[in-house]
Image: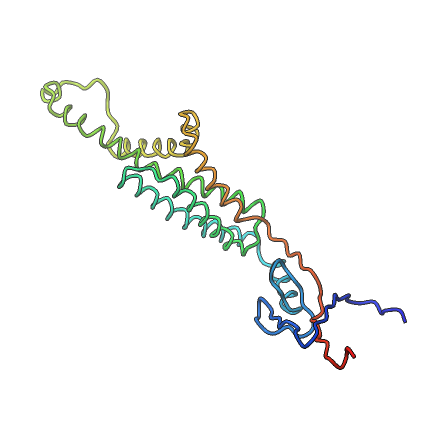
Length: 242
């Protein structure tokens, strides 16, 4: 008799009642009849259908905003930690940038509801790059303040200034000048990988690039490539084999 069309199952038989006990990787309930496999995880038919629906609906714009927010918060925290090590310890622990890439990548992926894809990979790399580079801006600004302090005291003590003589040029208000210097420091920090390349600091550049790769890798597109359905094996009893 020809087999009726429908779901095709792979079967396995185990002698002596040794059939493995299977449980769904999502709902954790025992799988009694059929199951699907995704990677190393098993899913019942109900959870497999639910996962398919979950990764098809929702607003892409909302997911992108959430990924930006999650990645931005983690990136800011990572930049703060990296900046502190640069300023307080006066040592460039470049390995910190790898951790920034790992955690920013995970944050962006969580914000995207684990969808992944090119858009989120580029977003994660961008946030990671900015977080790594911007950590040097406070260091540059602190160097500017340290360099300017003795210059100001020298100008205040000069006879020309004390006698009221005209200065060679009109100086900007202090707040405006510091704001401009801060923007210059940010621009210098964002260009640091280029400076490292020109100065021959290949090791720091490689570590920097590895951190970016971690952020990229964490947001690969999720493909629900389910295998199955497979039938739960029925144990072969001794009576059935005789």
